[in-house]
Length: 102
DNA sequence: TACAGGGCCGTAC
DNA sequence: CGTACGGCCCTGT
Image 1 (spheres, rainbow, N blue to C red):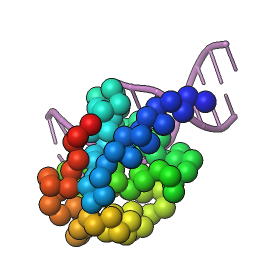
Image 2 (tube, rainbow, N blue to C red):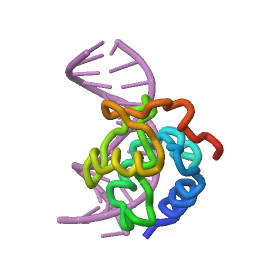
Image 3 (cartoon, rainbow, N blue to C red):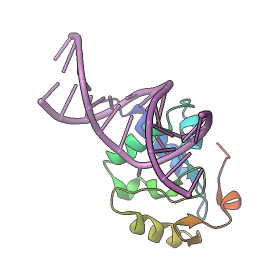
């Protein structure tokens, strides 16, 4: 099992402050895979432990929440629970909520 | 062990 | 505004 990247991603997610979000592109870049944003989605899709793996903190680079294994609405719900304002399926104040401190 | 396909995207046309 | 394709690693057969 090459869960190395998975763990890395998890660590990066843990670095995201409450109320902030990151994009697939950013995460991929932070992992050293600039063009692997799609791969990130793949990892998250096979998310082994949703509870310890806040993948909902990852949104599309255009601010849209994007998809979610358990449903987009659930994702939005969790984001709101983190203090992120979601409207019409997209993150409000996206630039502000976006965390790039990797 | 090898091959082929997949995925919560992004960018370009 | 909508469609098509691209490049990345993992999973399953």
